[in-house]
Length: 279
Image (spheres, rainbow, N blue to C red):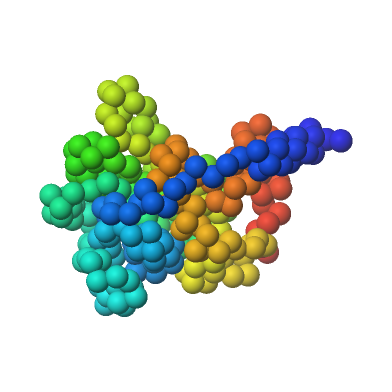
């Protein structure tokens, strides 16, 4: 058996044992009355997180670029949910004027429009996407840190497998997600060293069955998308239990480990899941 095959078998055995003995530490009651600011809440995973938080009794402020769509989400939720539009340039003008309202969770989930294609040399688009997907996260987190520290709160950052493993068709997007991993993982160390009681949970997601993701990847990847409601719940549970990283689906953690151990073999396997017939 090849080394990568042995590693996969070993990983499967370990995963089976963990699944057998593991107990869920998440207590939904802990979110009752929790004050949550959730970005990118008008659709997809963000919308599903809004429904979960409302069901758990959290007090939520939802933000998104598309105010009209966001209001439709709000009508499906309890009356005390607040909404407002957030500019994509949040790195320049952070929209955290509601921080005095109090904050226990800042969930950063918004992203710019993603081009799922081969690199075509569009540097300006990459600069813009970095502004939306990375710099705005840094600005919003920085603005929220004082109130999160005061309330022993949590910072939840939604990222992607493409921020751990570089994949085809995602050059600009992958760059923004690697940046998130580098910044917030480093910041976590600094907060711990300074004994500042703010947890940082980085959420690594695979392909999720949101409308935008399915549209972008249709005919280009041989992968089955995972359900958005379950992904949203995994993110919320991870933030509530203050874990450092959430992987959804769970087996992505083993993919990342194998990538580190076998990058050459892993690259060949990875490319086999993508459909590219040349120009």
